Length: 83
Length: 404
Image (cartoon, rainbow over all chains, first blue to last red; front, side, top):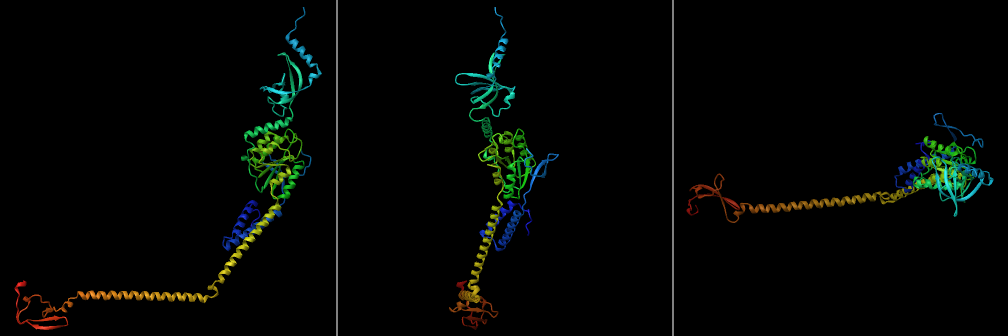
């Protein structure tokens, strides 16, 4: 089963990985279960690495919309023209 | 006779006299505040004294509003103002325009006062401090959109953890409007939950420059924030009220960026570590299974399967033997019982009496003859002896009366 990108949060992925590695190190599961855990763990590691590799920083400036709700605007590098 | 003058005229004369003295129009006096009172009108009344004498003072609302700390009785202060007469009382007094605490600056005193007040209210309580998320998806940065601080934070956050989206809420960080803008932005970020974590602060500057972060409104907004707040004001030694209230204090804005997100290189190392541990665990598991397999393969049943069959056959033979012997035992028990039963039966048989000399007489119909009355001369009957029979003829019947 392919791990969908962003289907799981980074934090959840890490804690799941921690759990998987603990089980695998204990070695108390049947081979079939161990193998599927190993597969899941490898998938999570790859997905996490990919998330890190592909990540591109997003920076937005928030402005109040007409109804006060936040509106995201591009953050222009206004070094100095603002107070 | 000299013309008498009114009290008012004299008081006004003295006032004019004093007011005309340039020295008295701008004096600077050092002393201890006593009997400090703030009237509902907003004017402050107090006495300035030293060990020997005292001076009545007043500070009008317009000047008092500009005070940056709260004067209290007992404080050593320096006071600026002019000396004049209050004609109604005929008393001269110091009309103050400025009061500054002795030694430390007024801002320092204001800082200590607000700190003591908020501390007493529990705004610095460690129990109230919220944990920071380990991997914040969004961080709200509440600071000036100009200046080095925001760019330092964007750069460091991007380098360490580019997965976090940065939400800038530009505010003024110095000047009179700054505290309200900062507090408003913190409340706004909470109201619309624009992020998982707030960083608020600014780069270094003078105590006046950083003053917005010593403002009570900002402190209360940070305290009320449901989103965790990192306070990042000035340089390392600068500590503001915001630092005390915030869930986490960063020494600088750059330091806040380091606190807010993990370093992706460390996380990569962690992932590599997981990979190694998972493979190691898997290899160990496989080795253990292989060893187990080899141990099984080495067992005699696998190496010499016929031996096992022989063993089974031996067991079978043994069982068969046990079965036969059990059957034999059972048979012999039956036989014994049969013999003993036959013996008892024989012991009880009437025929056995015959061996002792008794006989049984029976008539021609085979009925047993018990009484002499059943016989008459000339009858035939049969005598049964233990080893044979004899047919007999009755010659004479003699009844024995004594037995009847």
